[in-house]
Amino acid sequence: MAREEVLAYGSATHLDALSRSKVLRRDQGFILDPIHMCELLGLGLTISSDLAGPAALFHSGQGYVVKVKSDSSQNEFRFSVVHEIVHWYLIKSFGIKDVYSSRQYWLLEAFVNSIVRELFLPKTWLQNLVFFQPEKIATYFGVDVDDVLLQKAAAGDLPTIFRYEGRVLCLQCGKPLSKTH
Image (cartoon, rainbow, N blue to C red; front, side, top):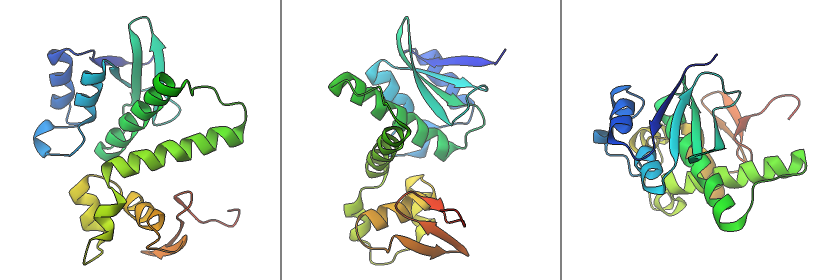
């Protein structure tokens, strides 16, 4: 049986437990604090070791719960929690929860990811930068370098196929290019 810890149903004790676990510390000054967002929205937040993907949104008897994989990095944790919050918003506001094909699923995931990237790193901020240094931008905003590159491409400032540090990225889907891409 997988180990799970319920970390937030608005309880300060649960939120303090997550801060102590070094997954996220409130004193780091990030613009979006996913723990606080869950607290404000009344969403549960759980760390789990048995998830197939990085995170998932579940409906429980107490409401909705965001489950995050226990081995997530800090950036993955933040991105995944906010990603699931966006899914929750789409369910609550528009009833969007069921997809009927693999294509619809991946289109929805790409749409949600684009919203999350915009929340963490608005394209307008990137367009106003004098020097483009992806690593420094990623560190400052607490995102991955690939997210910085995807936002620059979405703003029309980079080609959709981009070579960076020996890797060739497809900036439409965010994945390194392979022979089967």
